[in-house]
Length: 377
Image (cartoon, rainbow, N blue to C red; front, side):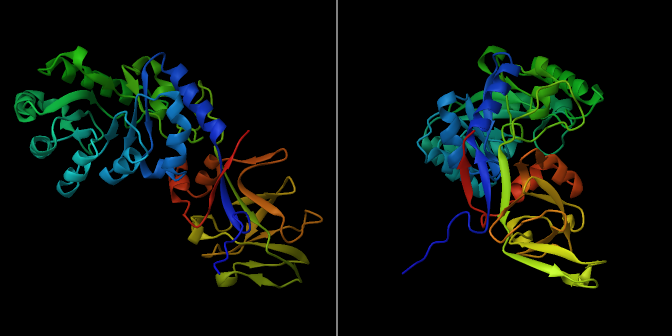
């Protein structure tokens, strides 16, 4: 007989769907009437695309954004009828899947245009958005060379591909200096003016999460929120906008308590040595769950509403915290490593800063071994 463990027996991720929906509405209000293309790539930033799409579909987003054809096909399989845009150039071997799922391709070069047009001959009329590279450099037609590619693009689309939208991607909307963003905006406007398409027929979109919050006047026809939906601050240290409601909490059970005499060591490399009598708690959480090894000696947890520090090296399946200052901790108690407990809160941004990375990587790095459990506020 197969025995299934309690989802909260070890360690888990809690997802607050009410907060997710509230963040969506904040974006919509900030965008001042522009449509919302909800970015659900990377399994909705690690939260679970099916869960997220089901939660926000009643809010009527304009479209969904993914990074791969497989991600788009997964969203389409949920019964979604609205547009699903692939915001990366499609590899040749992914074109057929994207076309079969009726996805909207991003066109970044003439080779991609030709492949999408050929697919449209087999599958019937297909939609596409045009990306113009104004400085990000990863994908898109070069803004400086509109005169060399625009007519060839129009010819390549033929009668079977409908160009539905055009966009660029801001590379520094989270920066305090407005120059890079305004430069990109002007480059984009100059390129739009040279396109041989009617502006009224195209959905124009520019702003990612940071752009929406810091530059709502650039919202155009639609905006593309990602990290903000999932509770991450897109511009830490830069004020002037409403912070998102936290969506994700990460918690783990205490599975062992040790009264460590002076001189006791803990973890690979024995990085921590007890200077006096200490009390340690083992948490079943490690880099196998996506808790970064680089947080060794840097991060904290909350137990019984009090912060405690991690000691010793983070290993694949376990970490240890010093609970000497927190009385009455027992096996089975819950430790919070992201989220709130009592008056204490550890944000995604705090953890990201300790790991010398960004909140996006912390969220998307949480491994499937951690069950995602819904929590409502």
